[in-house]
Amino acid sequence: MDLILLRRKVIEHQANLFREGYLDDQFTQLQKLQDESSPDFVFEVVTMYFDDSENLLGNMTRALEQPIVDFKQVDAYVHQYKGSSASVGAARVKNVCANFRNLCEAQNREGCLKSLHRLKQEYSVLKTNLQYLFKLQQDIRTAGGSIPMMD
Image 1 (cartoon, helix red, strand yellow):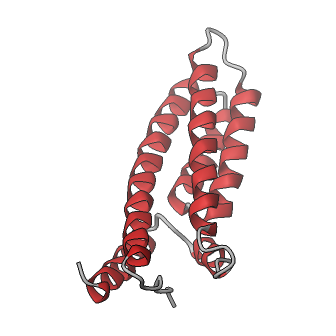
Image 2: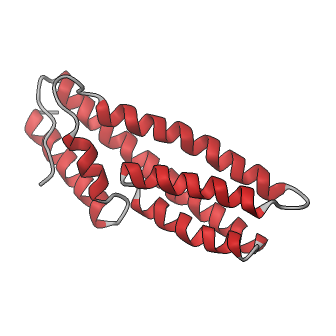
């Protein structure tokens, strides 16, 4: 695939993620921190976010499976996840976390389980899309091109 087409795909894919609300301006701010001295900065930060996400989602799942749910602990996990999602610009995941926290406060187990399910769905879609974006960017670098920046 030629560089012009790859660059166009990156721009279109990323624009779709913003338009659909998966990403917000914080993601753009992360990209602005990436330069020649740290060409994989966003990839590395988001990869750490993916690892954190897997751990926190697992912790939430285990906590909600307990016979007696410690809603304060679940809320602490959700709060942490909301913060890490906000820091990478994962807008839809962050928004689900905000609703999830309200359900923890109300000690609504059924609502929490539904929120957890939605959180896993939103995260899965985001992760798949970001991995595709990073693959396109890597293809551009391999072909000797530079990654286009969003306006």
